[in-house]
Length: 141
Image (cartoon, rainbow, N blue to C red; front, side, top):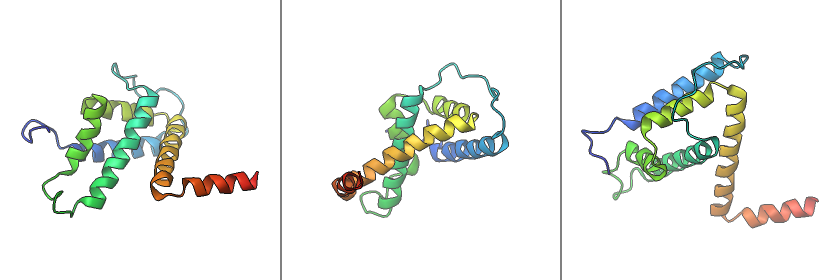
């Protein structure tokens, strides 16, 4: 776990990154030209998709358990840092990569569809409905 005095407030960084993301998407939807230079340490697309899935899962876990007595001392950024630690990616590299990918709205939308698809699969697996949905799909074909 990182020391509070040595880490950035990752929750604030994530909010800032998401704000930049939304601004970029809305401001540049018609533009396909390179908006910003490619970062030197750009996270590969597949890894970025997996990281975004894990960021959403971390956020959901924190939201669900934030009032649990065991979790009272946990902070939101600890959940986000656990994702960065898992992938061994500095927060600055994650933020730069997120902004870079978001500067290409059509491609980023495709990436985010993959994120949402993975999250949907995870939800189905944990809700016990995966087999039910697969059975339904087989009946339709």
